[in-house]
Amino acid sequence: MVSVTTAQMYAWLGAYMWPLFRILGLVATEPILGNRAVPRRVKVGFALLVTLVIAPVLPSVPAIEPLSPAGILIAIQQILIGVSMGFVIRIVMHTVEMAGQLAGLQMGLGFAVFFDPQTAGQTPVIGQFTGLVATLVLVASNAHYLILLALVESFTRLPISTSPLSAAGFSAIVGWGGEIFSSGLLMSLPVIAALLITNLGIGIMTRAAPQLNLFAVGFPLTLAAGFLVLYLSIPLLAPMMIHFAETAIATMLRVMSAMHP
Image 1 (cartoon, rainbow, N blue to C red):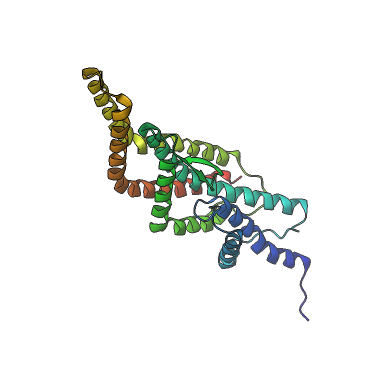
Image 2: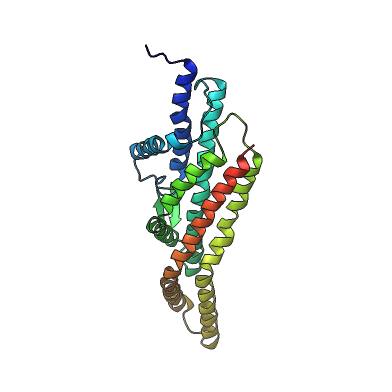
């Protein structure tokens, strides 16, 4: 007769349940599958599939009752870890969108906004365009595969346990959040510089010919110059996106190591 002890049952249950919480947190916040356009059933099904595939190769997990205080603590920790990993990757998308927003404001398209279902708010059209291009670049460069590899590696760097998470990991996430402003401004510099030169030229023209209608001439020129530089800079977006994605994955692993107590 086969007998199963309570400790064995908890170990089998935890071997799949605790990793599932971490994977669900990542899928909920990761920019590709975490998009609101993806149905929740697809997200949960994908998380279950990944859990079934990687659970047998993960380090052993503690045999703890799921509904006990320690089990609830582990569940909360795993969800928090997954959300942190997804947030690190999402910063890359926000960086590109911010670059588009800065370029759009300089072009005079600050009033042209669309409803973004991802953030449930209004997003400038240029920012949404650059965000879509960045998503396509991430998929084309197999960045989603690298994210899954980093997810598996995270269970080795930050094993499942009842130990509290270190605050150094969250400090690393805050520092990584500063990349939104510095990298976003860096990516939008070509458009900003071109529009600055265009505005200087328009100012000289207006000074030379005061009867020139600034609003009738300046706005079309600004739009044309902005779209031209944006078109020329799109091929350079892919290498920068790949670099940001690789840096984000390295940062994700560094955050996992820093969270280790």
